[in-house]
Image (tube, rainbow, N blue to C red; front, side, top):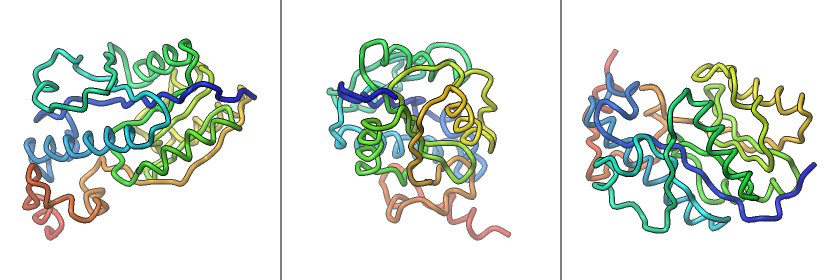
Length: 223
């Protein structure tokens, strides 16, 4: 078992919140503009809790890269480090981010932007768990995960994974045990990926000036 001695880097795997590109599975309920506005709200939430956790550097691993005009319009905090996701499926992109972080001598918390239930305390607990476990995982109700923390890199956690299915978290747990690594499981949270998940948005989010609640109300009351 390895013990994290260096700061933990939080790496946020994020898409630019532009219409037709981010949160496309929510477009039937919210429209392209509404889905993009919610994506922006969730991105800002992820950045805020990651910085407020103060467990180490925070990196935005972006698609498209930082030079895309969609990012400039957001005026995100200047203390963010930036990196490019590059090509490949989700596993390949996450693997590159994890590998370069571990090679720097840091532990890594990989998170996305789809989990409004995640908060600063959750990230701090995840970072603390890496002091006694090789890895940590935050499962989600849909069978995926919202956070993967690592002290070391192993390709089996990323390659040939059935991404976007209900088997991802269980497969990750099995593969970590096979390495073998100790794995700390954190509380299960709920991602916002599908229209049904909109019912679990935090109170007050629909009142955000960049996010119109009307499509959500229409969705909720439709037969």
